[in-house]
Image (cartoon, rainbow, N blue to C red; front, top):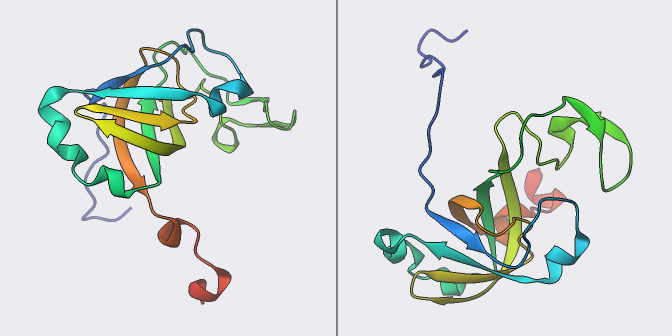
Length: 145
């Protein structure tokens, strides 16, 4: 272990920055959600953090699986039916219950973001929003050399 490393905290707490509003009311695997529009209602005191978000095409949305209880380390994946570890899947049943989805940015009105493709249910707490920047995320093999 690195002697200068900070000790790992026993607990980490987050305060949601907002919540999801859509018509996806119950947890479960549903491919239709990726074609639907959701609103992310940001706390009013954080609205200035949306400055220039309208310049982006896609966003990462990090959220908390507030209705998922418990987890299994090995389970069957929805997308291919294969058995895998939880860290090799997109299961909402995770040790920390954090979800991550890349969404299409549609528009912003005040403290409300309109996005398409968010696989989170109505009322889901949003933890963070980050830009998806294609040239940084999808580096070519040439740029890795």
